[in-house]
Image (cartoon, rainbow, N blue to C red):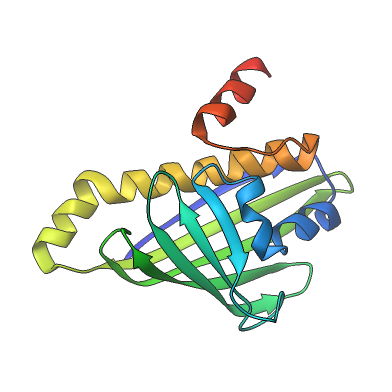
Length: 166
């Protein structure tokens, strides 16, 4: 199993960051790797809430909440739908921690196994893990920008431009 963790500190209250990340259908507003996202269930928060994420430049995944701790974090099961990496047992965990009243640490932990046996492991070592780690880094940086400024992140290029200007 491949596991990695990324975190960032956001200059916004824990309540504000929670309000943003718990809006599962709104991830497209801050994740440059997601071009479109929407709910697939009538449930919009809590266990079994689910969303589809259409990925940049192509691909689609479904994410379903498997654990929900209101105001603190949640876990998702990630199911590839189309043009996604050859992974299985894919999950993500989002955890929020108040640093001060106006600073919040968010931590994302990713776990997955590779399909395709030895070829999958080789692909993971050469390409997939680095791309996934970069994608989570971009998600967190986009979340930071959106939480602090309200600016929506359309793609990686716009995120890099905002970060370079700051």
